[in-house]
Image (cartoon, rainbow, N blue to C red; front, side, top):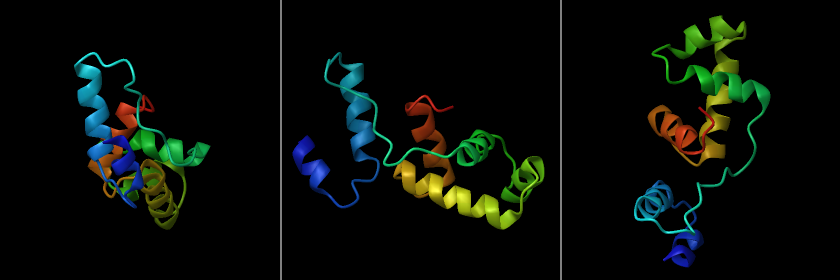
Length: 99
């Protein structure tokens, strides 16, 4: 199953859910999903603000950066975590113990 999943160009959330299910059932080979690429310090700072119900504009104000900078960091975070939206990014970050 893993070989087929890793061959997919975009496995989406399936791999993360399979690994979590395997961990619940005591399989030793269950590892947390890997990050495609390490997050930068600024991306990590933005990531830590995502679970709060702040808009991207509010996050920008908190971090003293522009709205476009926050949007760019969010896109990079989503790409690196292999997700497509904020809610999935938060869940993936929690699964990876980044939050």
